[in-house]
Image (cartoon, rainbow, N blue to C red; front, top):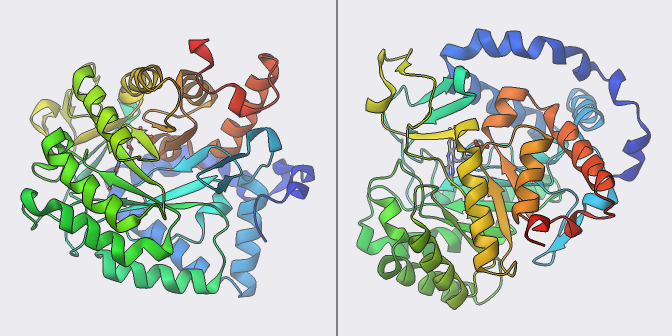
Amino acid sequence: MICYQPFLMSIDKNITMLNFLKPFYPIFFAVVNNSPEYVHNQTIKTLQNIEKKRDSIGSKWLIRQMEETFCSYDSALSQSLWNLKFTNPLGLAPGFDKNAQGAGIWSSFGFGFAELGAVTLHPQQGNPLPRMFRLPEDKAILNRMGANNDGAKNIASRLEQIWFRQKRAIPIGINLCKSKITDLSDAADDYVNSFKYLRGWADYFVVNVSSPNTPGLRSLQAGNQLKPILEALTKENQGEKPILIKIAPDLEWQEISSILQISGDYNLSGVIATNTTITREGLKTKILPATRKPITEENGGISGLPLRQRSTEIIRFIYQETKGQLPIIGVGGISDTESAWEKIIAGATLLQFYSGWIYEGPWVVPEILQGLKRKLEENGLNHIEQAIGMEHN
Ligand SMILES: Cc1cc2nc3c(=O)[nH]c(=O)nc-3n(C[C@H](O)[C@H](O)[C@H](O)COP(=O)(O)O)c2cc1C
């Protein structure tokens, strides 16, 4: 069953088994607070098993439960972009499914699209544990995972198997990152070779030059280093797949302008704003409980609520600079209807989230989508496309 079938609208979402679990989510969340990566890995493995056995009675029943609980369809939220159909604008941000283990199940959580990865050419372990921390006071996550993943070749063969079992129900993106062992000067080859393995198994690709957890990666955002990467990738791609760039929130306006200029030169399909931030300004958390060290001394990127405002400012800036001509995927601090709507009217065509989904639980996806529909009605609009960049009118 594909989750965006309109008949699901008629099902009373309050009567599913998963909705009975909703009140217990905050308790579960508090209990597992000290081992977020372990819980994450177990969750991914469970979802992978459900998807692998999708024809078994148990999996079929569970997937149906998920779809009845989390999927909601409204034609007012559906868009066509890059020749792809996005049945709703809310996607899963990269970092959650780094190895594409759950690639076939994200549609059943109600997402309009999902971005997998980051994938690097070479398999890599990432940074030492612990490397993922929740900051509940800030509704934030600190991570310094370091792009741990199975590598492009293995992930391509996993995706091949998944897409053999089932057709892609939603657009799938892949976030490409440079391998840690590859010199910055050889970055272009690293990205291109990953792309060659993966190009047949996803719908769009993202040049991630903004993760703070791969040494030197963010320096690739500078023009002289970015151009050879985009040159090589776009040459290899020959216009076949949409290629986007994901930027950091810690850039100066001038640096963003320069990236936009280069993105235009290479005909990129869009910009993703933003990755996690390295600033620690405004955080309520002063000491990281897991390490008992000041938060200012802990490496890594912050996501979630503290990022919300900066990421929206950047979306607003990009929309203005490009006169709304370059699609923007807005990400950073989305956790409810207001934070999602704010990014759309600032100029985002599509949205992604990670931290808010973890903090609020998967029920938040239909809540946000229904909230966006309400926002359209309140503003006298018929379709989400009319709301994109609306605050600039
Ligand atoms: C644990 C973790 C791992 C992440 N890994 C990646 C990654 O591999 N590639 C990437 O582009 N962004 C990665 N991100 C950043 C998210 O995709 C997103 O840009 C950021 O978290 C802001 O969104 P949020 O506030 O909704 O979490 C990661 C975030 C977290 C929390």
